[in-house]
Image (cartoon, rainbow, N blue to C red; front, side):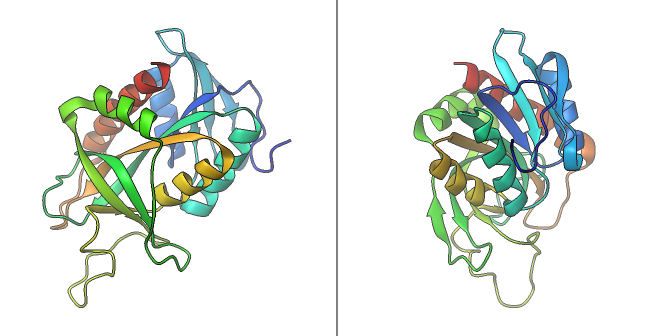
Length: 222
């Protein structure tokens, strides 16, 4: 039996992973026909069902931060997960990404847990399929994964600032753990805040997450 999840319905070999439980519900309703809740333990809402194309898919919340996400991923792998796409949010560091824009992760650097920026890479084939499905709606990016939310600083720049396009709290940890577990993993992130501090409203973020989720489901089914 998994350590954190308590599945009440079968989970699929393919999954879309999101941090926020509410966003997991939204994507389950958008991506699945007659979704069934497969987990509600610890507030980590998960849903499983079939896509309109007939593919089995799980949409699972991972909670906040890398440690929580890594535990959920390990439980899913124990339940048979083989491929996953993280659909998350991030704060832009480079000046170009705008609020609500999608970033396709090509590389993630672990600055969490005392990490020194070690790079983690997504699975190449799944990332290529995701990139094809996203098309021009997503910008390729390098991200830093942190213990806390990135905050703009007026004093000394953060040590990762010149190396990455955006920062989040999970992607590098998930990519490293996925490789250890033999799970193919890719990631796409919606920009919640620009480098200048402009924030995306909830409707914009929800629309971006839905677009990312649709692309992720298509990439997983191809």
